[in-house]
Length: 494
Image (cartoon, rainbow, N blue to C red):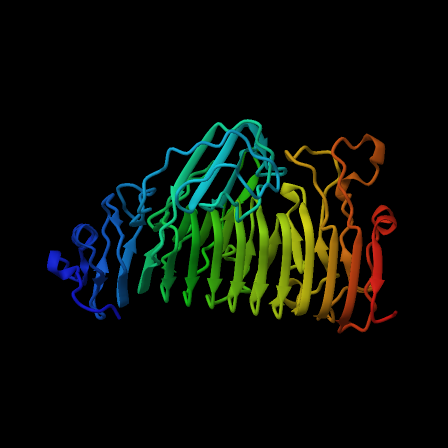
């Protein structure tokens, strides 16, 4: 609870009966609260309807939505891309220039007066040239990091920057902003479009550093046979220190459309989205029906640094266009879409249960790159949600023929220290789990010397305490090139 005095929506005309459009009153209440530095608190039994108008309430003070309900009806709206709530940064951008940066750089000769979030971009260099049905021409190379007032960089740089074509430097907020409670229900859009798709917002967007969302609930109802995807009901971008805790999310129905290659593709719809965030945490967050394949994975992230999931039960975790630094999954349960990883640094999966087709899927549409190390500790894996499967623990696919905009490699070192694999439901002729898929994929007949973008193999795989319930001993891989490259140590056999 927030100590009084507080600002209420009712003081600015909100009705809270679930019918009247309360969004104008909500916008006015937050505008007043922001101007006077006052917290906002809602009536616990109110049902606020957020209407169809293209209005955005800006939150700059602590807000307690407690047990209030919010109705978002997306069947008829003025602007599908408009945010309902925005948590904007407190500070303006600084005029601070950086001329060049080097990969893994951790110090600058000059520094701002305060700790800052920094975004740098070189639009003359493209990265993440996606392969497959959703192929793309790439994304401009960019980095986000924290620059301290002593010139130190807390999150090492991912790329070399001889040229910086765009830069944003913004002071970090010292005070943590807290948003708590709130039960939101989205009546899903029924938008129909034969070719391509349009992401919907109608959401909560956070661009302020040091923000905590605690105990928020989001439901999705009214999905029909047609609809367009959502970019994330709880979305955050370009900031530092974001925590979503004790929240409940909902999966969205998967729809299909015609993609860029004139072929059917799935439209991924997220309830949580993080882009260009440094230090992003999800703690004790959950959802229902994590094994329901008719619904898309609940989370997507891009270009983040240092991600932590702890105590969560979710259908998926995905670092779509990369994470760097630390990527930690601890005390979690991940459902049918499992754990996806692209990036660099240290990936740790500990005391968790996973149901994906692979224990970790290193996304092949981005080259199956993990530049760093992987640790699996005290986990359980039920491949393909317990359906019949011949499990491959790490999915890696890269035949060396596609330019992703960066050199690609498997994790340099992998350590498995305690893993139970429930592979009892396997096909006839099953010979045991493989630690790695064949990375050559469809390029088996291509000579190594004619592959223009060679895929670097894993150097070391160390395992201990691996139990397969089928009773069959696991094997490294079927691929001879990988078998020759990797140093395999079964510590139980030593």
